[in-house]
Amino acid sequence: MQYPATHLVVMGVAGSGKSTIAAALSQQLGWACAEADEFHPQANINKMSQGIPLQDEDRWPWLQEIRDWMTAQAQSGQCTVLTCSALRKSYRDLLAEAEGRVLFLHLHGEADLIGQRMQGREGHFMPPTLLPSQLATLEPLSPEELAQGSLRLDISKSPEELVQTILAALRLPAA
Figure 1 (cartoon, helix red, strand yellow):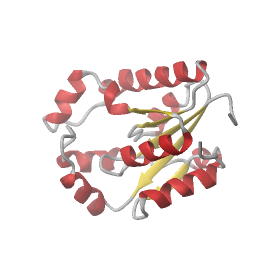
Figure 2 (figure 1 turned 90 degrees about the vertical axis):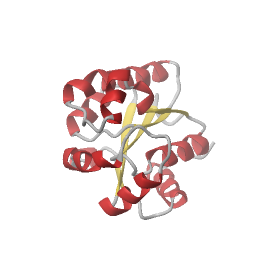
Figure 3 (figure 1 turned 30 degrees about the vertical axis):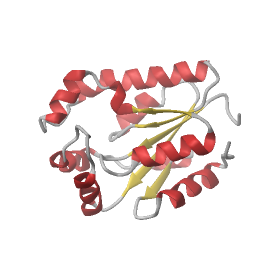
Figure 4 (figure 1 turned 120 degrees about the vertical axis):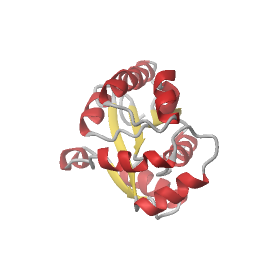
């Protein structure tokens, strides 16, 4: 392992391809993978299912659960890949408190493309009507985050291209 533990947080708005990229990275690297949506309490899922955007008071306990999961994985010697919208820098700062090295992989693209992808999804509780609130909330990676190794990635590229770009940029060997 290159670092005591590395956590790759695949971030971006709903429909940006987080699950696809995280699964491919997990498979390529042989690292544990988790979906941040699985950490949401039922109250958050109910709100989003009804088209009600989450507020910070809804998000903080959820983000703390994710951070604590990453720390537990690091303490067991496991690197991770996980999906998390991580829309605000303050949210990313909380996640970065996890034990180990935390890098953010921001999947970004045109709102029309993301909206089309959301329309085509089945069985997800996040309706396309919440995309504008997510885009309004999104704070791009800061120069400091980018300098620490986080990446901004254009979703108009294929998932395969994105995964290869990530592996090469972070110098991560496939399993």
